[in-house]
Length: 130
Image 1 (cartoon, rainbow, N blue to C red):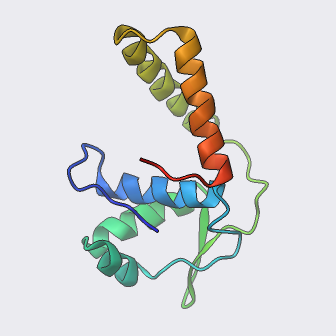
Image 2: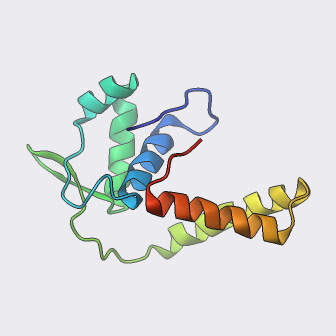
């Protein structure tokens, strides 16, 4: 269910965050679903519990999950979360950098847009990542 690539340049806590967000988009994790405890998740992924804790804290800050003292962490039942304009701006900046890189590698606008559409459909329909 959760996939971590220890060879990736992306920090493990960010990979955990992205995994949880993707599983939510694919409707595998639904509102109110309980997440594994920090220790359980760390054990499942063979990572340090502090890494999982950092990911959970960031997900809570972003209002993706909520933590109930003594009960654990859950997917946020409030699916009508306000848009964080700073996060949107950062995401668009990353997308811009990726588009520049793809264009530099010879991809034209049509191919870039087609790939973005394919990725979006894959995520929304619950497809598997390569």
